[in-house]
Length: 223
Image (cartoon, rainbow, N blue to C red):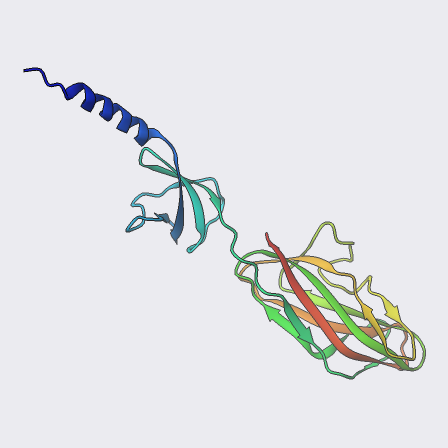
């Protein structure tokens, strides 16, 4: 007797083969960085084999976009994690700045150590209320940045990742607010970076007052 269902079953098998070969976009989570392991959304456990990837570096916990085809998986994109919150560091209400034309003086307590989880671009700005007390001359403000940070190529050159050579100045005898130009800095991931507010005079005598020194670190994008 002729099997009337056989042609239908054969066609279904062919269709299933085509479906199996059709690329499917799926989200997944990196469960291990080395060797690379990914668990696709909806699966009970990570893939037993290392998936291929177009990305140079992935970390445990990264959310990734994968292309699955014929039991093979290719990672094509990673979702960017949320940027860290903006940070601030403050100085006291009245710091007396003594003379010293070539000497930057650290504003007490106005410093911060930050370790980003991965390479991160940040905008750094410092400002203060300054006033000449005696001796004439003018005062400058800046931010010393240490820990392997890199100055962005579109920032004006100043010899390094610091805000010391192109800061504004003030010689007023009344309280005057000044800001140093914003600088874009690349912070290395996993490395502590220290931000220190400092100030200086251009003459070797007299004093200035540096009030309410404040620095801001605003994350811009992951590097």
